[in-house]
Image 1 (cartoon, helix red, strand yellow):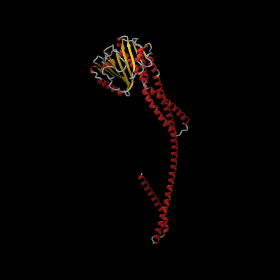
Image 2 (cartoon, rainbow, N blue to C red):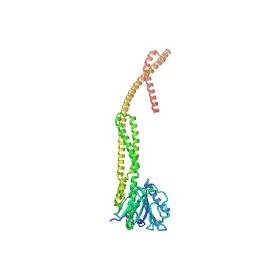
Image 3 (cartoon, one colour):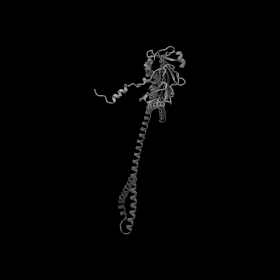
Image 4 (cartoon, rainbow, N blue to C red):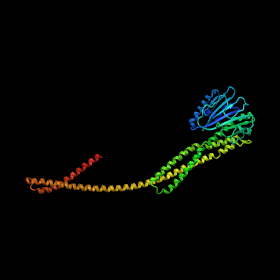
Length: 453
């Protein structure tokens, strides 16, 4: 068998190492817990910031480094007061949110814990955490106690208590699901013995806060979802009207009308695309969140308590169908985008056909123009040759006239016997001379035109 590389054993240890190693050693009951969860707008950027925020929290509360553990996505710190009370603060970063838990574990196990502010000596949470508040819980854990709904009603105000016996009927959990004056929902956890609670304490709290966190996360975009439903309905009706108009007028539509349609449809398509991207970002995690909720609800193995509705009933009432509704909206938006793309494609095809017709008409016009130019050019060439012929005759005529004057003068001077004969002989000579002059002039003009171009 080949040896594992140096990185592989570390990776295997990281996979199998408990995330909250050694934390259970510090946790105990009775305890008073504040749990808060905040959603990160940009998890890759803000997750390291929350880690630094947690380090600042530990420093502000003077928690010693020897009782501090900080990992990449989990950390905790423990402080012990002069009276023996213990303060345990945990931080945990998840895919979309991060959370803090503050545990106050009194040294006196008989101390009566009350909902509200943590009573650990000199404890104050020093800042407002980063991100959007998703969830806030106030949890009291009491061993060696029994649930009395009538007494709890006074400590947990709200229209209805929800609760049940969990983890094999050994532990009782009651919740009011109504934020108190501090904005926290209240949970009361009790068991017949401390040993029962101690064995399942971490698992119980993790399960309860996971149900609460993911229930709030799945409901967080519900308002945006409701608004988007109205917007999608508006665009569906608008596009239906647009398609009816386009279908009836497409055959006779002019290029200006087609351009107007394209402009309006493209603007609507961009609005729908922006809506689609926003909703996909906000709603895409709903299905896995719903599965996480369902898995944790099953983990509780909840059984009914007298005078209380089941916690699982409340959770199912809040979340059932929400993820399906989100997915149906995303499908409607996808279908609407495809409808816009199809309509725009039809109009562009019509524009292409119009351009082809215009190009063919322009091509025919150009051919006719070329034929006309060719005819004109031929006529100009014939006219040019005619003019050149006439020019030769005119020049020859003037040369002959000038020659006759010269020959007549020579005759009167006694040099020539007959000037008429000489004039007749000079006529063909003048024709040759005039032809030469026209040829030389045409060559000079062509040379100058060529040099100019």
